[in-house]
Length: 297
Image (cartoon, rainbow, N blue to C red; front, top):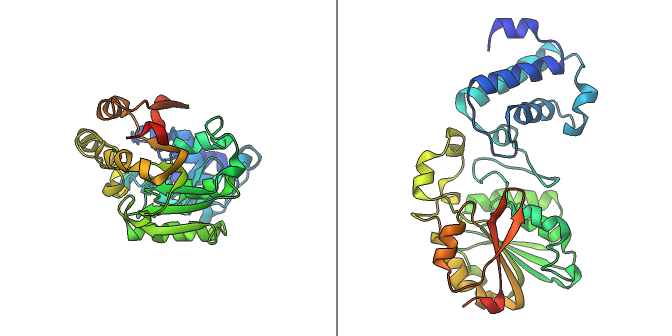
């Protein structure tokens, strides 16, 4: 940071403007909850000051203390120089209105499946109250498990991950939402730890980034655990295991919902004999597929 910046910044609006300029001139990558330099700057400034994002305009012309300005400038420089995503800097991520604790033991929540859950997975789930068993594979921070527990009020949710460290983060989030009696955290490689259970809905946001894409990822993504991103040569390494085994873990009429990023072509090639249903998201209809129990092999 510069002495000039410290001397000339007074209001929250001043610091926000400075941050947007620094982020744009530094060619940062966004995609961990915020889509551009302004959203990233607003998130860092408002949440560092413990202010609600929705009230930015109300607080924009508020004068900041010297200590607040110094703290914000340090955060801005850390974002620029270390390329640390804002969610890790603040230990805070938001997904569809839900707040989660995050650190570098888990990937930052950003699943398109959460969008689809806003309407209780309608029309694929006709009666949300009839959903009693949900499985969230590759749960990470437990974000999808928590949203599922909140939306399906009669459901017990199993949240599975192969990483013991990720499950420690998940445990904190489950406790924050007081869902300890409804969400079970299970260390397991895919279905191994739930061998004898069947579910109404299986959700999964697995590692699906191809080897080639992993080599091209911006520096921000290097802060995330590689095991939660890397999906092998075609991105389908874990997805293939899940699809092969899912039928035996679904109730009759149960749903498998899997996110594959931009892997639609690879998924259709791998599962050409399964009538996958591609679901519409804000990023298009190539991100998430659905298959019913009777459609799976």
